[in-house]
Image (cartoon, rainbow, N blue to C red):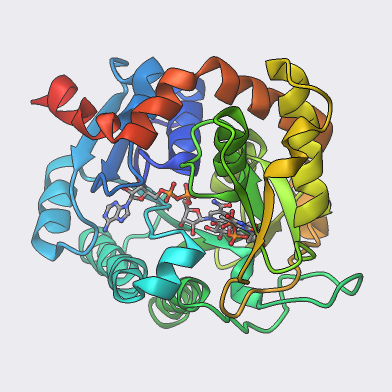
Length: 351
Ligand code: NAD
Ligand code: DAU
């Protein structure tokens, strides 16, 4: 196996931390560099397990900072990039869109441009891998068709429009400069270390603390859920075997309406923390719908299965069980995040 110098951006976030851990553990001959700005969503506690490994380096910085990105490229000479850093929460993109434009569009272009400057025209063994979302395809009808790799882009929120723009920029570098890229578009992830503003960790936390469970609209929207470690494994497979210039959809064929998922969560959490069965259903509170709320996402993941041999390893019931157990057993992590204490981890460990 070749030695590689892999820059992973956004590695202190939810999915990024699973990807960093996966690569540090499974590829001891790779040098893994985690570049993260540590926004509210970045938490280095997520990486405690590997922070002292010899093949791991943390770099604190902003992907839109051109001179900083140039300086780290000059110092470390990365041969590949797995780009996950982004503003990722749809609700925040509705209330505060401009940071999404800056980070997701300008940040991605900055990385593309600096990688191109450094790799010159020698693209042998080089790779720019953009980790993207199924939301770029827009919204599906209930019970209808799926998102395929050739589904036309139709993003509807500031978040998904910014991710669609970054996908287009990555393809433009590929088309114009023959730049070595690959893109994946994944469905909703769940699992350990997810920031508790997203549906599943927010609701687990609220059930544990007997707080209201705010269901947007009627709870009929459908999401296609994938366990985060299965996403990290798919990223590994695409990184090593994906064909340059291609796009791969990643998903679990696992659609749930929000309300059914919430009831399943309530069932599992109530049982595990010793509540009466269904006790927390009284916490369900229907609230005003999300503006422009996409009705349904559902991925067709045939291409990655047929071409690269990836399929999800976990059934949803098992993945959700592991997730609920993790948040119950890691209440310190959850409390540090909800209290803001996690913000001081960087100063304690790295200053
Ligand atoms: P997250 O919000 O948990 O983490 C994002 C990370 O990026 C954080 O550590 C943050 O500090 C960092 N970051 C943000 N702005 C930065 C900047 N300007 N410079 C450097 N670092 C910065 O996000 P996530 O849910 O882990 O998503 C990771 C990626 O995967 C995103 O690109 C997202 O669009 C994509 N994705 C997410 C999902 C999902 O269900 N969460 C599904 C498909 C694709
Ligand atoms: O599909 C992939 C996308 O999944 C990623 O690209 C995004 O980064 C990620 O945040 C996620 O987007 P969603 O908007 O689907 O995830 P969220 O957890 O915010 O919401 C899931 C569903 O639950 C959605 O239909 C809105 C609803 N919801 C969400 C919250 C936070 C509620 O009903 N109540 C809530 O409080």
